[in-house]
Image (cartoon, rainbow, N blue to C red; front, side):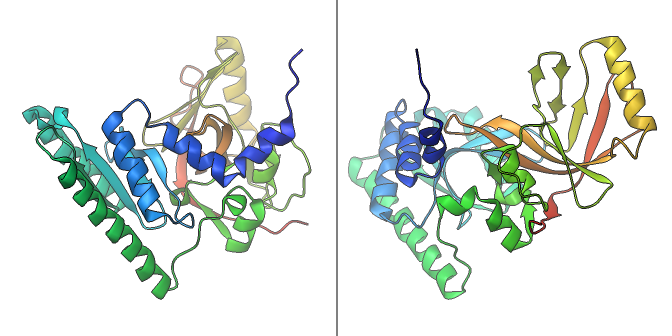
Amino acid sequence: MLIINTQKIIASYMNKKEYIIRQLSRTKNKKYEAYVVTRIIHLIDDFSIKFVTQQHVTRPNGKRALTDLFFPQIDVHIEIDEDHHLIDKNIKEDKIREADIINATEHEILRVDVKEEESFESINAQINEIVKKIKGLKIKKLIDDKFIAWNIDAEYNSKTYILQGYIDVSDNVAFKTIKDACNCFGHNYSGYQRAGASHPDPDIWLWFPKLFPNGEWNNKISDDEETITERNEDDLKAKKHVLSRIKNKEKYRHQRIVFAKVKGNLGYMLYRFRGLYKLDIQESSEKIGLVWKRTETRVKTYGQK
């Protein structure tokens, strides 16, 4: 019989060593990427700086791109250019993709050329320049009093966002459990498993959906995350669900703060903040389902009662 120690599973969310090892292991099947990423991290040698490998970025057209390495505190992405980037078509696509990422995020992209003709010394020289720049950007932020050291305990703690006064999509906020998200809005739960919860504003509901086919539900989110569609697979149930939600606004609030259930980049299930959505009655129908449109990417948090 397999016995799962849930305390160890929960603790691994809070373990910086586990996070770092798992992030680096994601590059193991790409030899040049593995070398560049691990060398950068080892040369920086500063675990107050958080890094993410294979970072998702939503482009203006709604499509998603992956960058090889990302430092969220200083808004810098690293891209590693291997031989396939030499193809004319790929060169053009890379330029468009880079422009899209910069336009969507206002972040900086630094590139490392590891193509066949590049010498080992040249690759290391490029890496050294990137490391120097990253350290310099941290120092500049420290001087401006804008650098917040990476604290993995605080990252998943509702108290962090209560003290901050808000949750913002740009901060890539996610919680381990539903109760952690709920506790950002006046609750003081020690455990909570329902897909919805109350909010201090009676017109708003906290929602924790699975935005993928799941049993009798087929909920979807658009690539740009601006629209969520909620529909039951059964046509009769779908019709009843849509009509009841539209007609009874007081019982079924028409505004929802959404924390979508997702698999985090290390394989754990998380509840990621997507924003405040409002029901679009005009676009909703029994055929399409309920259509929710994002109205805010930042929401206010509330102290626990």
